Every structure is written in structure tokens, then in C-alpha cells.
Length: 317
Image (tube, rainbow, N blue to C red; front, side):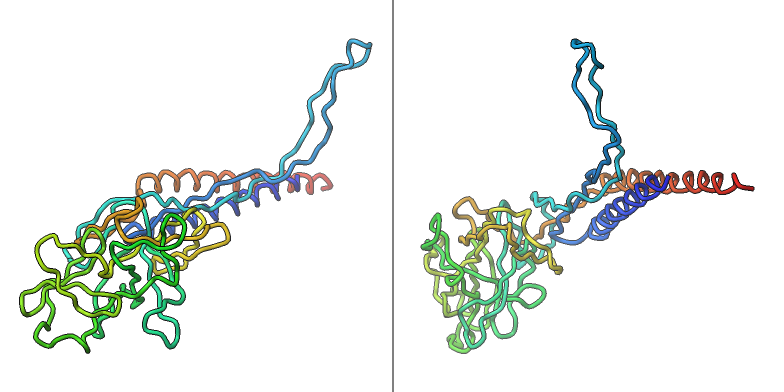
């Protein structure tokens, strides 16, 4: 009977972990860019009471017998994340960016002593961007948004850019002509190119150094201007969540590749909205009910076994 107790305890622990995962999914039902997780179970161990044997009836012996086994419960097999794209939530804020397709925004901080080279970077599907007082394009936590020169290709696999090619997107207000300041109507194009209208009515984009360069004519080429970069991750399920809607690589992620938005099958940018949470409330509630019943059933087995043990103890009375 003690086997049944340990088996039921393993079931309680597994269902508790799954309930924790469901609770986190429901808690993030309104978290922009959140990707739901799921917990799956596996059986753990079997004790062989009797091994199976083949038939020897034709030689006057016994027929075959199947093995007798007793299982010892369940354990969590995996907790994985569903990285499928979700819907567009309108915010009517022009600097909010939604990735219409695959890819991840790249954000991070500069290497110490440098104004161009990026250090540690993180990946995110949440494009809540704005320019700070110094002209850096940052996300909601102040990390710098990475970009690459528009219209160019890198030297990596599939003409991807290397980590060393990533540059922060900025406006160099100190060197800008005062006649064009302040900038108004800042826009982020579907190709990731950031532009703004100066006080002189001319539309400007920003190069790698943050200098303002006039875009002459409607639909003019934007080659060389800084554009928001996206990361292609070979195995998105291998990304590790670190909070604040950020991901970092793990040993099973693969080497990320960096491209300009809208190139090499990467998604394009749609402004004025953010990616919705992928939490499906109806599915989570259904999973919650099933998990609750599984927990209750395992707890019930413990109560039943406890009653059986009590009967054994009372046999001596």
C-alpha cells in the first residue's frame, strides 16, 4: 500500500506544477507579446513483478505469459512555450510596432566605452518604442533598439548581419542643424526605417552615426539609413524567458541571424499596435478543470490508502 502513497504523491506534484503553468498563462492574459506555456506528463518507473515469457506449448510446456508490472506514478515531462504569432492589438500610438510575421526585436545596451558597439542583447516580440531625451530609440525598460543599414546585406549565413554589425538607432541632436529641430511626426516604416519631419518641412532619416539625412521625393530610396533589425532564431522553443517580455539564447537555440525588417522572409512592421497575448482563456479554463480533477483524484487515493492502513493497524485490537 505504501507504493500507492508514493505514486499518488508524484501525481500531486505533477498536477501542482501544471496548475502553476496554467496560473501564469491566465495571469498574463493581457500581457503584450506573451507566449503561453504548457506542461506535459510522463510515466516514470515500473517494477517488474514477473517477466514475460514466450510460448513453449508445442514442446509440452506452458504457453506465453505477459509481464506483470506496477507503475510508480507520473512526473512533468516538459514545460514548453508556444511561439506562434498572435493577433494585432490597436494602441493608436505611432511608435508601437507589431511584427507581421516571423522574427524578434533586438534590444540591449552598449559595450562599455563605446557609442556604437552593442554588448549583451535580448530578444522580444513587444515593440513599445520611443526616443529618449538624448535621441536614443529605446524600449519600455530603456534598452536600446538595434538596427542595421537599410538596403545592405551582411557577411553571415544567408547574407545575415553579424552581432558586430548591430548598431543602436539614434538621433544625434548635438550635431543636428538647429533649423531642422524639433523633429515631428516620427514614423517607422514597414521596412523598419525610422524617419521624421523637421521644422523646415523636410523628411529626414538617420544614418549610423545618428546624423539627419534628407529623404528627397516621395518613395525615395532609403539605402544606408538605419532600419530596425529582426532576429531569426533557428529554434524559438529553445529561447529562455527572463521576464519583462525578454528572451535570451540557450544551448538549444541555435545561432541567431540578424536581418533588416521585411527582408529574407522576416516579418514587416505595422505601427500603431502591439502583439496580443496568446493566452486562450477558454482553453486555460478547460485545462484548469482537468488539472484540478487530476489533483483531486490523486488526493482521494491518498485518503483511501490511509483508510486501508488504518484498518490494518486496527486488526490487532
